[in-house]
Structures are given as C-alpha cells and as structure tokens.
Length: 165
Image (tube, rainbow, N blue to C red; front, side, top):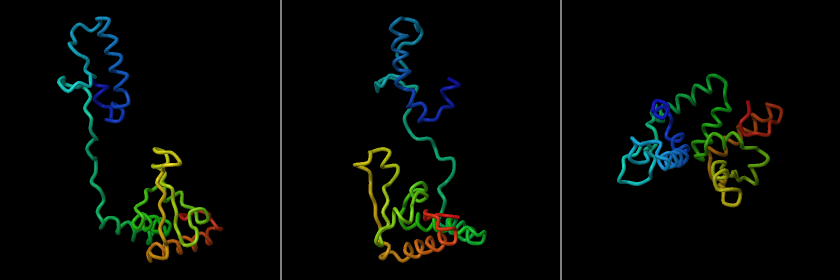
C-alpha cells in the first residue's frame, strides 16, 4: 500500500490492468482467502483501490500580470528570443514544443505561418494531425514577432529556427 499510494494517477492507470489480472489469477488459485473480491475490479458496486482522476495542481496557473513581468524581465536581461516565444504563444496559443520547432524556411510560406501540432501528430498520426496556419499579414503582433525573429536570425549567423539565441 505504501508503494501504491505514492504513485501518480497516470502510473496507477498504467498498472491497473496488470494488477486486475494478477489478483484474478491469485484468487482463482485461492491464494488470497482473506480478500473477498478483486480490489482492481471495474464493477461499480465494489469499493476500488484505484480511483480515476487527475492529481491536484501543485501551483496556480500564472496570471497575465506575471506573464508581462517575465516578458519585461526578458527584455532587461537580453533574451529577445524569450520575448518572441512568449509573443507567439500569446497570439497563436501553441505549446512550447511547437513554438521551439518553428523554422523560418519550413513553417513560413508566402506570409503564412504553418504548423503541424506535435501532440496531435503523436496521438492521431500524420494523416489526422491538426494543421494550423496564420496569415501573418492579418496579425500585426505576429508580423512584428516574425520580423524580429528574422533580424535575430541574421544576427545569429542565419539560424534556421524562429527562436534563436
């Protein structure tokens, strides 16, 4: 029980089927006479050892004031790439991994910023993955951020990535 209680819900869910099968085997051989039912059973009329659900958040989500404080601090500390990343996340709602993988040559075509969402690609495969695009000409902030990324790329020996330092 001590080992089980420290597992996260994801770790418990991953082991649930194996434990149910193990307990069914043990109970079938009558090796657990004190146990009346399988604690990993999926029936609703029995108490379960395994409870579904996400763990409670350890910290609160950042507020917009904190976002802008980090944005300004990045400017003062000389991290324009962080400002570009934060601006792109604010305008496109992309995740960190998708933003970091953006390339100026591959993802920017004819004033369109295109991206295949990585999480969707891993979950659904190449044919069903979410493909998003933004017309940079219609978004002033995004156009400015991409322009800053181009300038920064030139300064950093033509780095192919939108985010470069």
